[in-house]
Length: 337
Image (cartoon, rainbow, N blue to C red):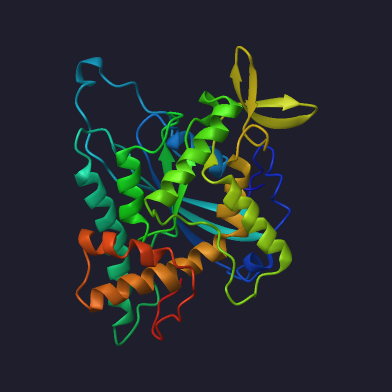
């Protein structure tokens, strides 16, 4: 694969990189690149930074300096850090905009973090709504709505915690929330299977609106797409392992995490769901995630905004509505990047 400078990376490409669904091909003519906005949310120590670097196949965020032990007890406030990476996947140019949230969940009371993230997501909607209402549009307007939000779950092996439930319920109708188990290699294969099942049981029990790879209700999806979405639903939540170490195996560069008992291959489906998740985000479902952001999530917010029914209370009240994957007709003056 090549980065934005056109240089080859010395990392093995995704095993899915040569495969793309018809839905992704219509964006190949985006000469300047297709913008895709990705937010990463999760507590410190769950591998968000490593995941970001592994996803982009280069060092986007350098290793942070070791904290001062004397200040280790002081919780840093949550921040929004932005990174932009030019990529090319299956002949399609992608402008990947990443929003990371270091400091999330580090305090005893995380209500402020919930509010800040929700306010960030809604501010991007407000910018689009304001642009739609302009008599003369700004040709350089950049759509910064978040197309996918990866929420990193602590690999406790038990079930969802209150912070997980509240965060995903609060934001499920403001973004395509995709649950991810961070550092999944800390669990045995059997523990991971059981943990995934408990998480999905909790998501169903609490009515948490996550992105569940829906099929078209108009029977537009072909049989292959229907099967693929069913397979992806069965994989939720994605169990990821990230690393930046590359070894040579049979003349092929492979990304691995090395342990005394052996190695975990990041791009091996038997070891991690990382490669499949990367394929979903940057290839097969990039169009679905963008379109659902515009046609479902934004339209729901726009209706709430114009009716004066927004805020945390409205967000919880309308979480069930966000689970509906029926495609709504976009506003006639909608702004789509």
